Length: 279
Length: 84
Image (cartoon, rainbow over all chains, first blue to last red; front, side):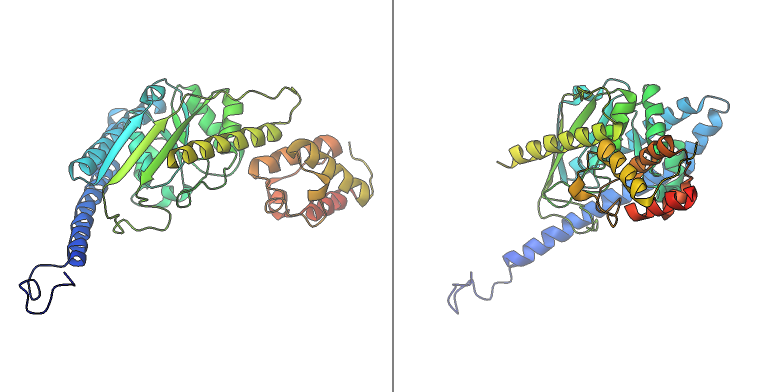
């Protein structure tokens, strides 16, 4: 178009330039994204303010475990609605492989954390799922009701978290941990904390790694929801075969040493998986 | 049981435990080494370290004690003060 000679029919045409179309497309995408998130927020508030109080009232005297499971099922419902919305509005495409590894009760899942949405995508496959959540959520007016009714685990420091997680696994509840403890850096993998390894050692459960890839990168650390990617997000979620980490050959290996070994093996596993996908 | 020990000996005990429990090497260990930033200990490791020190020296650590400890020097000072 820039080559059009002055006076040619193209030159003063009122049609929008490519850049303008792109901006418009982006605004339209941001609008649909906003809609999806608004819906998500409303459903979340509905859970916290209406559904969960009702569940608690209905279950007076029932064991906490049963109530928490029912509340987690509602969270699963909201996640499903939200992912259906993202798909329906053409905002995201989700591909999940190996979902059969999610079915066994008491599964200990670990995942990398490229975007805020990965927990939603994984949660939309699991009617019961415990997670470890930032402790500050218990004092956040929007999150407070949800995290307390579902029995999610606050990320206090040290042994208490491991014990709380192990207790849930023992009850046959599945649990998701992000070993990085925060969202992954763009296109990479942050340092791993050793909680997942300690939990595997304590509970004797294998670790089921979930490898999440999201292109183009979306909702990374520090990104706002309206900074939408230019094209549809594509989530590729691979649930790998559970890995049983061998206890060391040396029965006297201190648990701190074992946790270091397992954590480093697990991170290598992720490095390889993410790298093999790039090629 | 409490034991008497020089600061040298205390430093040696602490280093022995760090090497055995956390697979650290002599090159990484010094009085100024920061337990979290330099030696990559986490909150669970801090508990393990205090348990091992309790076994070795018979001192018990409280949570507040652990909070004020940052470097190996702090560990040695803490033990030295309590044994003294």
